[in-house]
Length: 187
Image 1: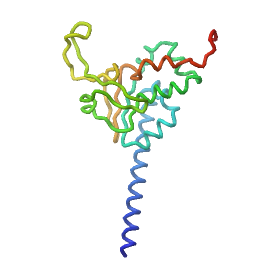
Image 2: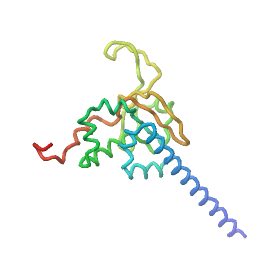
Image 3: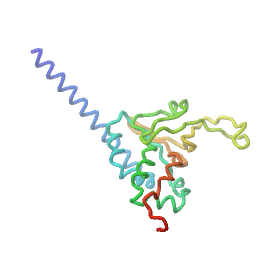
């Protein structure tokens, strides 16, 4: 009887773990659909990165920093072309990884953080200010800047959160790695 109880408890734990895994996977699929529908450019940026999605499925919640369509338009034709060029796939994937965390980061946590560790690496988080002159003398306005990108709205989705930002959050140095496979003089 004791062995049977242990076996039953193990089965319950296994089923619970499997249910949690499936729930996380279903939530991540729902976020993918949400991004595809509402943020097609960001979806295009991260959708082809299978490793990113695997990490999110295996994580404990998720956080996305999702640039709006205007943020991609502001990049200009050259940078948009670089993101779409298959020769830049590794760098494009890395840029996408800077927009995702495999755990839930609440707005309060983000507001009080000095930085976060994304799947791509560390990025700075600051409080936004308004007023002042050239960034001096401004007053905190209760907002958050993620590597210089202002959080404009947020969506709680299951065990995670999606923050819309007004720019891409990856470090600017990432753009230097684009086009490294091009032959000088070629287009």
